[in-house]
Length: 128
Length: 107
Image (tube, rainbow over the protein chains, first blue to last red):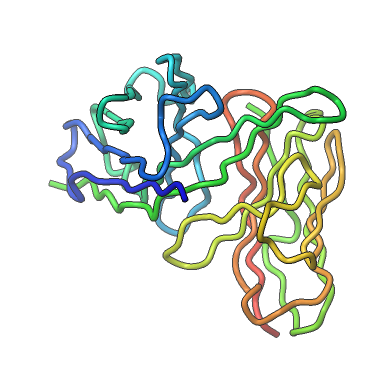
């Protein structure tokens, strides 16, 4: 059974870089059947999609974060990572990594996507 | 970005009740919609994908319907473990977006 685990500092100073790693166990990041995603949730608020990466290295980012975000994959370690630079208090949140499955519909041949495996989340606070 | 608006934002119900949550998209998203359940301090759990397909292991009292811009999540008979926050997500185009959530509370 695939499991994801986030790791990284829980406290980051304003203007510095937030760095998180998601370790995948029970499966491989080197698969064409999935995207690997980062999502965050500020305290008391809803979920916000940050971006995702395919095993080939292709990435997609939320436009409002794109200038500050880098998502990368390290297949040798079965990990993918998130870097968010120039952080402010607004970046304080619980950060989740998730697997996005690509499923080809049997009847219509369309690709469907869904996030079926999530890490437990890690709290990152931006404060001096 | 595609906006998703859920209604209601809060819902009070009793064990055994049938409840329906609506998710409306600001533009058509075909059937590229998923529903998640989230409990406090936990990660979201996938319930429904492709608008109406039940994720493996999810009880059959959960069902989803809709396409285009209007979708519903229905719980046919509420169980104590169902009291949580529910949110929808569109996966038709980047950036993916989520609804603001519906908090289901015990009456």
